[in-house]
Length: 167
Image 1 (cartoon, rainbow, N blue to C red):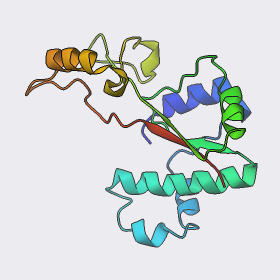
Image 2 (image 1 turned 90 degrees about the vertical axis):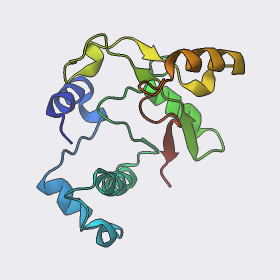
Image 3 (image 1 turned 90 degrees about the horizontal axis):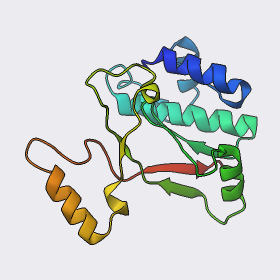
């Protein structure tokens, strides 16, 4: 919602492969077409989660219209990385499997300095592994080192992100 520089960079890099709808009159008009709008209309001004739910509804609607088969919601401070650096091939592989959802365990960025530019990944190259990928022994050692009353190993969520098949 607040990162026009990132939207510009993504559009310049990926062009027609990516649809970007920034918050504004066009997106809010799309919200009104959703069955869930009545439930969330009183919350959109102040509730980030309400806007995300409505945005997801718009994304599903657009994906169906465009023939897109998979959706993945990521924030402007998140990066989706595949082993072969080919997202299309990755989702084509998923499309051949009998599944409707894939969960990706997230890693958390570790900025080297307090202020980072809007295009986060031009400055951040170090990441903490998700706690769920550690063995029991590794987890005990890492979390004992990091966790305290003032610091947590992961500052945000650690349950991962889901990509979903558009039905």
